Image (cartoon, rainbow, N blue to C red; front, side, top):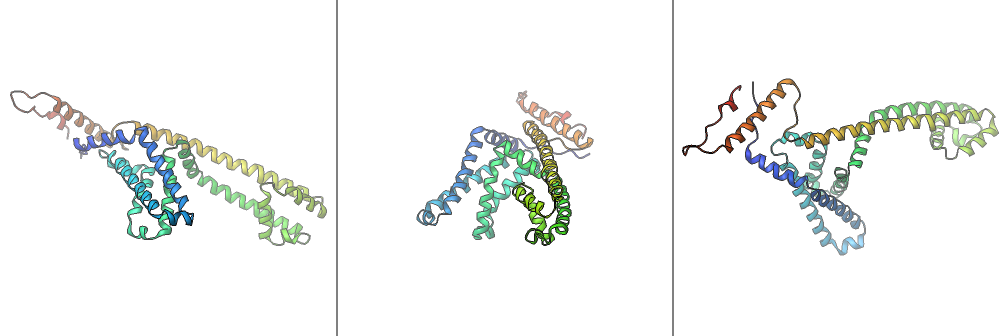
Length: 302
């Protein structure tokens, strides 16, 4: 059975020091302020007069922001020196690394438009320092499958009602129901109930049964489907909170995250025991001027 080699003491010390720095509240506050400063600089550059007058100052400030972002990224990577694979398991780490590293890619640095878009992506990094915003973004991602199903059902309902509206009102109101496309656009705008009163009045001039058409559509599209969408989003928010809580618990636990499978669990326990025995061996005092004996038990079972 192959046992993973424990991280060296130098890497463990480096990870411990970097972890102390990155977990400090002041560190997150400084990075958050730099992100806001970067966003403000982008806003100032949209004014041609200010951008031309303070071009050198703006460029220097941008370079300082990039240097601080790079230093932050190096510290975050150093915090995972004892378990580098765990760094790439966090999607936020991958996102931050891609945004910061893209500024050093030659093709990207030469493309002004692409570089500005990537600089704008740095603003999204504020989600790392705002837990509620991070939960909201995770919830949006988790709700995409349910939202796709909702859009399919909503589109089906919209198409059916558009066809009925075309059959009933095409001759009397061609501006709104002259084709299935116009009918779908009209009904889509009525989903927010804006202009529903005028539509009902126009429909009553054609037929009294139009009230059933508009009432059923408003009930189904504006109340039932919208409430279904709200339910999907709320369910995704609950899942996002659970994911974030589990991630917080994993970050607070020292050492590498537990691997899947019973064999991996045994290997992790053996690696942890070996590290503990090596630390005990290092703390033992030397006897007879000779270095302390190496604990053979730490290598038994391999």
